[in-house]
Picture 1 (cartoon, rainbow, N blue to C red):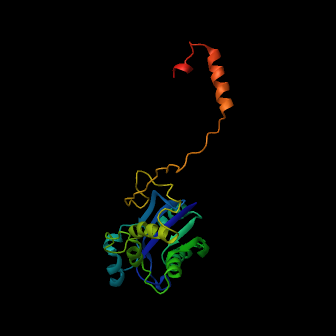
Picture 2: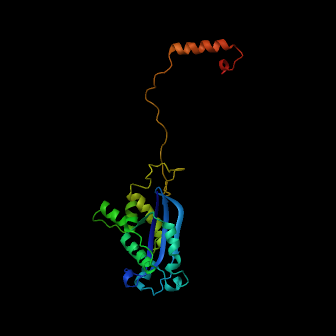
Picture 3: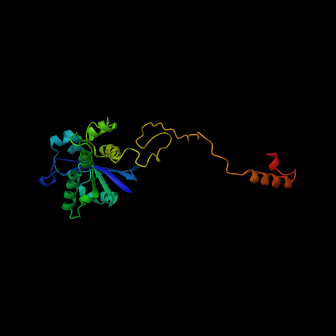
Length: 230
């Protein structure tokens, strides 16, 4: 099962009033395990950058001016995500922006059924609690110290860890992925895989008559055989 954990950064809150996507990040999961394959692209929004948006992600128009516009990267992005599930924190927001861009290009929209909304998952699991990405990192003990500002790829990597916690822990495959004492999140792990000894030995399954028949067979082979010397 393939999933893409993804995030976008934008110039504002509403694509229908002229706001645009300026960054897309995505992390590929196969059977809930990160493969190391990612998608990351900065995008020239072809407009100014409101100071409020700049304060969130730190992406200036000067930095973005030589980056490709959305229609130049749209097919590459669609090829990466395919028809697989998109895991997004507050999925309606990102899907609204992506589909506004596709609509400008007269391309088919991504169906909302393709998205898994981790914000909705968190609200159902922790009703009434803070369920921002930072709050969920604190709740699950996930290191987000590198997150000084929002960034699409970094947020996707962090969200992948949060998502695994929301679906039942960082080892959804019952720890079969544990290698050399480290789980998929890189956390140190101590596990005892020693098979405990039986408190009472099982009775022998071979009868005395069978033992004697075997001894008689060995005796017939003579003294030069290897078996009696073992």
